[in-house]
Length: 250
Image: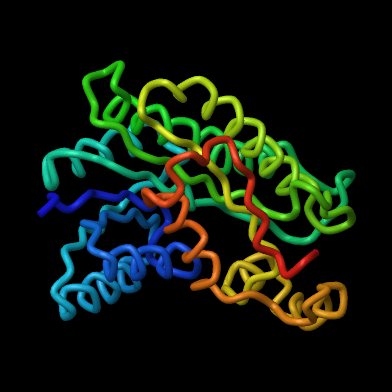
């Protein structure tokens, strides 16, 4: 019997992240996940998983802080001893705005968390998983967005641009570590029913945009999680550098 593998999901206490954590735990992964401030949601998810017999570790960490990223990975090292998968899910969106209304502070926060945070986490994962560093291989899945293709004009082009950067980073890193046992892919969700729309000041966004989706419905967090878990699995052993759209055809 193979030893269970360890997965780290950033921003894993709610929404798509929590769906990934639940599905991974149900499929036998040892799961660690980070959260920024909502301790109640993180504790609730941990209790839920423990009641099913799964092993989970919640760690408070802001991926926009290099010190927090280092502490996050060191905590996972100490608790599980190894790392086999990383899901770069943590990210932010901001209020709907045109580019001529955006502050430098907003832009700095957007790219520090969505781009630099993901790159820092990938760096630490590669150090642990790459055969070049004595690792046994593994997989990284980055959460991008259909916004990277669509541009989100008049809403948040800064968010779309940050996800475009994630797409480019995914392809580049995949090629960089392709011979080192590490696969790197991205999932690009479309309109998904999570709290992120409300956090961006548009709780009715799905209702307004539904008609633009060819399937005429929003996606569910578990539908994104299923795509992520496939990319993490051995079934995707020849898949790297892929940008997988899960967007209902949009």
